Amino acid sequence: MRVLVTGAAGAIGQVVTVGLTDRGHDVVGLDRLPPPEGSTVPWHTVDSADADAVASVFAEASPHAVVHLAGHPGEANLPDSLTSHVVTTAALLDAMVEHGVRRMVYASSNHAVGHTPRTGLLTEDTRPRPDTFYGVGKVAAEALLSLYADRRGLDTVACRIGSFLPQPETRRHLSTWLSHDDGVRMVEAALTAPAPGYAVLYGVSANSRGWWDLEPGRRLGYQPQDDAEEFADRIVARVEDDTEAAYVGGSFVTAAYERPA
Ligand code: 15L
Image 1 (cartoon, rainbow, N blue to C red):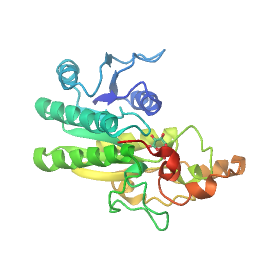
Image 2: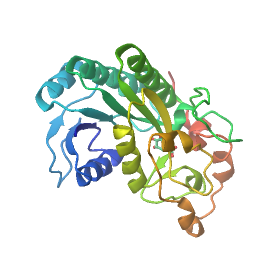
Image 3: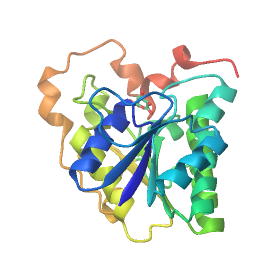
């Protein structure tokens, strides 16, 4: 399968590009930045928010599927957040419709539901509850995925990613960690699951202290293998730990993450 990966120069993009290539997929990279050193995949240095440029990439690359990872990974003002997450997603979905590409795997985030108090299991039915404009951007992008599944018949999978890191670094990460290998497993499952329509899954590893429902992912074939618990004795306690434990979104719910609209 030829897969167009947006944000291919980013932290998740670099890992997913190598992982999908290793698993036999032909990856085409797209990013505002040039390819990272050592990258060997075909590359388009293009802003995903530029609909005309995105359409040209589709005409040239003829992808079979899109993994949309591009987007600023933290808080910004509202217009920038909407451009980064919503305008990019719309440009890609429109190009998909135009070129008959049926599937998008989208890097949504736990911050789409980050203002949910941390009590029970976080399920796919949790109401959208963003903790930031970043989270608003992710909720709106998920809504676009749903719209294009309903109106255009696309298969669109929103992966609400936790903390994608080589290894967990804080107490919160013991619950929210997504290992690199599981990240690749998640993306490949979401790319290949038969006819998901619009679906949401939680992008976390099989963490012993996890409180995010893994079932929606398992139904799509995502079987996480890693567990943050393996690193638990190396995690140093921090004063922020208790605050971060209060809400799903951790530190994003605190005042430090507020930005003017
Ligand atoms: C995210 O969505 C962010 O992009 C990343 O920077 C982390 O903050 C992560 O969530 C998290 O919640 O740990």
